[in-house]
Amino acid sequence: MEIILKPWPWYVSGPLIAIIMFLLIFAGKKFGISSNMRTLCSIAGAGKFSTFFNYDWRSESWNLMVVLGAILGGFLAANYLVEPNFQVNLNPEVVNQLDSYGFSEAGKDFLPAELFSWKNLDPKNIVLLLAGGFLIGFGSRYAGGCTSGHGISGLSNFQLPSLVAVIGFFIGGLIMVHLVFPLIF
Image 1 (cartoon, one colour):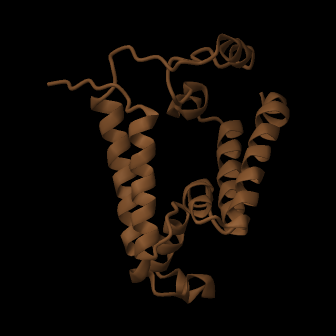
Image 2 (cartoon, rainbow, N blue to C red):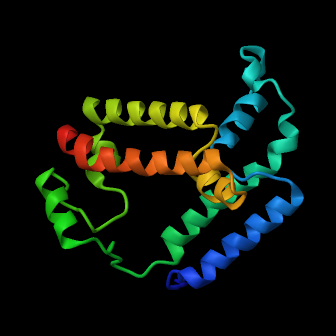
């Protein structure tokens, strides 16, 4: 049995996120995905090698449910809640530009097969994925959190460092898309 639902509109999902953030603030908790990597490393025993991982991870284990929920929700949405022959609604100019870079399936899926399929996993893509993962990990640690932590939790707490971080994320994204991406492809 296939269940097909439309994506929730902003006026439903936005207030739900606001309610969750209010509950987290009320409970004295901070939301963020990158902090879960620290928790997982601490659970695995990384505290023996670095004092950064030497903390009471049990107090942060509630946040692992957020990651589990994101994985489960993404799986359910991708496999049961999308329409058959779903197409990503991209601007035709973006599709043409991506096509000129060699992304022939642009707009047909969220993850371009030219980057995220096993058959296209060549040394160039491995280096790009490893470098991107390192930069994301380093950047989120250096910034004291990730885009979700600063953009949702930090901004809802009116934290100036989160505002600076979010502005930096957007500037970095613009530089990547308009300057670095065309050089890579």
